[in-house]
Length: 259
Image 1 (cartoon, rainbow, N blue to C red):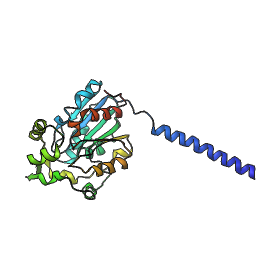
Image 2: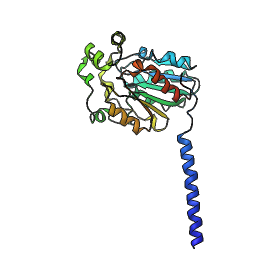
Image 3: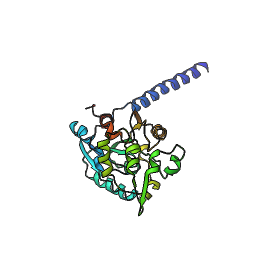
């Protein structure tokens, strides 16, 4: 009996080691090498917000497309992103900033998508009330400057420059303010039907000085999805103020070396 018990214990130990090695190998597996990157902007922005990141990704040999997110409804934004994904040839990294994270959480199940990258972004679970989740964290100062007209929102100049674009040079911040996308008030309560981050490798850039989405909420989201995470000394628009670090994270998700 003793020999039998010892043999069983050895077998269990062997299987534990083997299984542990397999899990470790899976966790450290190199990302799929992607040839494309699709970028989704958030509320109060447009595709030009990726202007500092795009040249760095192109220099690394990637095919890059910025979705012109209509911001009229979650359904419209999802449809616009799917149209762009349909045109990609091969593995594609899907990237979002801010509210755009809602869009890629819905569209990231597309078989072409090899990885997801969230830049100071929402990352809702399926059918999650993200407004309620956000309410568990301190409110961003930017909200005091939200102006609403005919169902659409925009940010006041003071709020945009001081809180939304904090850390961005004033000249550039004023340019982005002029380009801001008018955003339907209804989109913030929109719920996804899926959460692609459950099944796709995910990456997250936390903005430590964010006054739009609370940094602790960003950390919660990154941890929940078990994302490869970096933290930047940046405000909400880290893609403008820290384009190299943002581009490097996208390159890592694409299985490419830093540029």
